[in-house]
Length: 317
Image 1 (cartoon, rainbow, N blue to C red):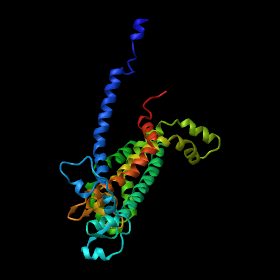
Image 2 (tube, one colour):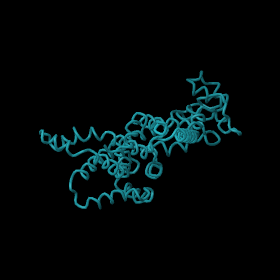
Image 3 (tube, helix red, strand yellow):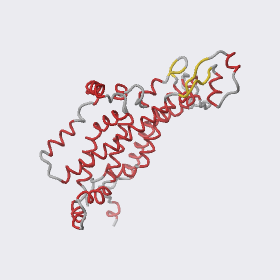
Image 4 (cartoon, rainbow, N blue to C red):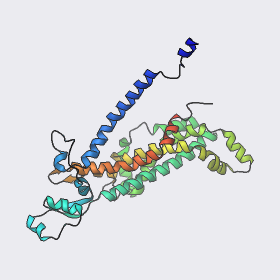
């Protein structure tokens, strides 16, 4: 009995191993979170506190960075400012303290909206095409299937920026340069290969017998796909959507080269936020903080599907 009690499973980790693993995970989480926390803190600093040395951890919170992010300002003489009426809101009051007036809204909101439309539009299109293609490769006898799958995978081997110049020339010729449609199609073409390979693995794990039983009951192939396969592939679709969205949301090189105004997204716009006398770091940090919100919310909402998707198929019954 003593030996049986002292014995432990070779699969179950010991208490020491669990504590060590937990400590490493916590340490890694802290290290990776420090830059994000510092960016968020900088968003609530004044321009003077943001560039102070040594860096200030304790400071008086200010919304000047957010005001500078959403507005454009112009410097005026104290006499002109005194001739104006009372400040129109918080941002106008902060601007007048620095002998400036609010000239109008900035371009951050339109750029942010472009990011939402392009990123989510390309993600929906890539996941849709990837799901249909993965189902075809998984369920049908496709000639040269292995060669085609390797060709699809090979499109991810070359850095996308390596083909940026040909794409720029092609887009300029066909009129897709600096358009939302052009960016959606481009990000879709980059993400669809990842979607096909990820989703094929998920669909392969779904037994064919479920579809066959549905078709025996009178369902068509498409009805069986929609009502039987898709519900069971929800985990894989959600995980694939997260990875596709992260790429499209954070992509910088194509956005810089192919957009300049109408379809410009937030990543190339945030670094060029220039303040009075230099880089406006609180405004840059505020723009970055707000830019992180949609992708964090989307990932948190689908976190259960993401964790299940990563381990799907690892254990077979």
